[in-house]
Amino acid sequence: ATIPGRPGTFTPRSAAQGRRQTPDTRTAVVFEYTPPMSASTAAASAAINVASSSRISSTGTCGLRIASLLPSTTDIVSALGLSEHLVGVTHECQIPEGCSPGLPHILTSSLLNYEGGQGDIDAKVKEAAADAAACRMPSVSTGTSNGTSNKNNASVADDFADSVQSLYPIDREALKLASPTVVLTQDLCGVCAPSTAEVKKALSGTNTSTRSSTADTVTTATDSVKVLSLEPESLQDVADTFVTVADACGVHERGIKMRDEFMSNLKLLKDTVDSALSATRDKNVTTSTKPRVLLLEWLDPPYDGGHWIPGIVAAAGCEYVKIGSQSSPSPDSWNGTKSKQVTWEDVYDADPDVVLVACCGFDLKRNVKDALGASDKLAKLRAAKKGRLFACDGDMYFARPGPMLLHGANISAQCAFDGLDRNVTAAVQSLDFAPEDDDGWSKVDVIRPSAGIADIEDQGFNEVCWAKLHQEACSAGQMHYVDPSTSYHVFTEVAHKKRGTCCGSGCRHCPYNHEKVRADLKADVIKQPSFLFKRADKSLFVVPESSSSISTDLERVKILFFSGGKDSFLALRALVRQGMEAHEGIGNAPFAIVLLTTFDATSRVIAHQDVHIR
Image (cartoon, rainbow, N blue to C red):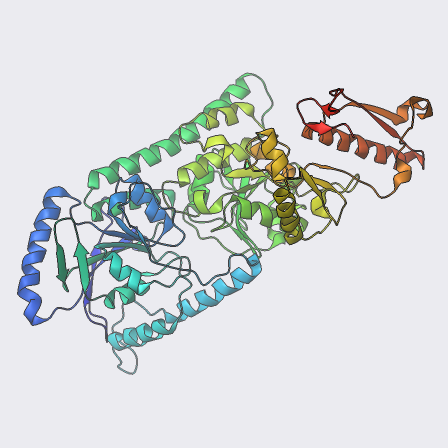
């Protein structure tokens, strides 16, 4: 069909080979775009196209140039071994290995401020979704009551669509430079990525393309571009898109193999969990029923997970909690259902055993941060109180309908059975597709104790001030600096590098990416950097001039074998904490801490740590 007021034609073709087709579902729609050509170039261009078609049919991928407008399709292209043909990706894609030099081009940008709060982002997305919904017109119509044809209605809708600003605008100049033969996009979500309509609009403005190769340069105005609109809703649909993309790129067999391995590994995960649970029961170890898992793909306001998420949780050997629905032994009952906005009361009523915070588009670090920011809401959940609240890399492992969902299913199983059944977690972690080193998920503690010394993150100081003080201390070669808001002595990167390895304590300025902090403890530990606590109330401490002046109340005297290193400072901090708590319990009685160490008699320096005894 031609688009009124636009050059060129878009021809719909079926692209769901080998898939069950129903009137309500489809895996993809393919549009083949043909720009207009002048009469003077028609003959020459036709000859070039015939030659190109001959090469493609004989070699499969000859002349293939792929523009991927989704992170998931970039993952699919990479998994199919087609990275060298990738000429364009989005600003959100991870660039795969094997791309040609100087490629791919970045084809999109974002109008969303992801540094803002989830509530602000949600408002912006809803506004864009409302605009997009206003553009929709019936795809099939015989006419209207006043005799206006559907063609005219389509023209009006198309003109209105032009005025709607996309959240992910396409860079037309970059698209022109990329000069793709295949464009991969989606129509599943109206605000998550450029739609088919936006791609058509962008392509219609790139009527002339220049193709470069090591052999020659060809300029033509008649190249046709395949536009694949992927619309997977369930895990099976996702697997089918592997074949759809492979077919469009001339590597059908690779797509079949990729689809079959994906589904086979999901089954392997389910069988592994079931087998480990059976072994536990055979040992007469009490094991609860399948954990009931809820995935929250947004927090402000809360949204439950939909589409392929119930299938992921089912593959993890668990029961998915769909808000507002009765429990069902069959995950197929919710397969492909959309995510929906719910209330926190709905979440509390559902009372899941396990909660995964895997917000769409956010990595693990951001989801940990936002989960802690929503602690007043999440802390009311039974799952949070029992230590079964987790943050996950929602962007990489749950939101992308591609091969990484397999890792998301594995992460779901690890979280669901963490602390519940070691047989299951060990078996799941041993699978080839388990993320390395517990990557992609972390336990989040939103139940904060009120007693004891407040940790530095509870003090409300300015991180900008930290950065400046730390930079100045490092420039001066200092081992620590004093935080002005708390009087804490904070270790600098200089001190950490001198040690040479991560200590696992979650230090504020760790230069080793906290590599030795257990993944399930990161959310708790990293917010508690190591420091030497200093209290203004000097009356709490006894600083004896001689051993004879130490209080005879030995319960109030603590002795620490002190090396001057980081572990010693952490131990000292723990003893101070204990002393303060004891002091608060028994009145104003002071306590003493005696440090025992060895040092060089000449230099007065403690061995191994290069810390002066003073």
